[in-house]
Image 1 (cartoon, protein in one colour):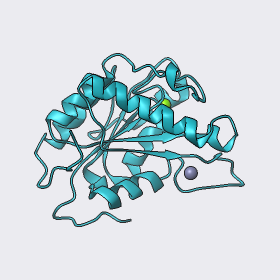
Image 2 (cartoon, rainbow, N blue to C red):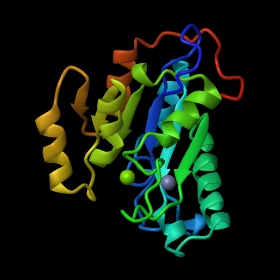
Image 3 (tube, helix red, strand yellow):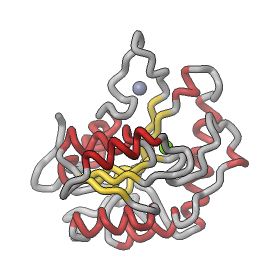
Image 4 (cartoon, rainbow, N blue to C red):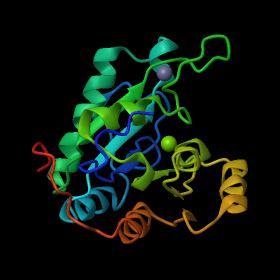
Length: 205
Ligand SMILES: [Mg+2]
Ligand SMILES: [Zn+2]
């Protein structure tokens, strides 16, 4: 695993998009339909204030399924960022897995795979072991178990009960459930210690 230079790598918050930051519209292809969930911008802004980078990681199998074009995906990503910025928040980067997730066509980036996290860590000098993994599905949280990081499930209306049960049975000193994205970010920042990184990302507003 590429963890970068241990002396300068910093913790990050890895946050799922659909059902965690924006309303889960199922294979969202229309940027005009992007809706931030309540408290999402404020939660990201809280991480910005603590100088902890926020990275969005999203499975977008709709691209491989032919339901979303790459241009539509990019428009939805850009609109999500526009709305976050309007709410006083900024993300460092967004990574997506465009693959189908079919067992016969495996990739290493579809969550709970670590491909997107490793790519982000290498590009931005992030410390995966000290980072937090937040989302509304168990697969968003599982990377915490693989990396030794902090996992936080934020159950939403689309969260399968099996995912809640998986998190409940794995609760520990580093694995939590939160009632809102705001609570999840507060837990993560408290665990990380809100310490300022040695080298704040220059493109973080
Ligand atoms: Mg989700
Ligand atoms: Zn993939």
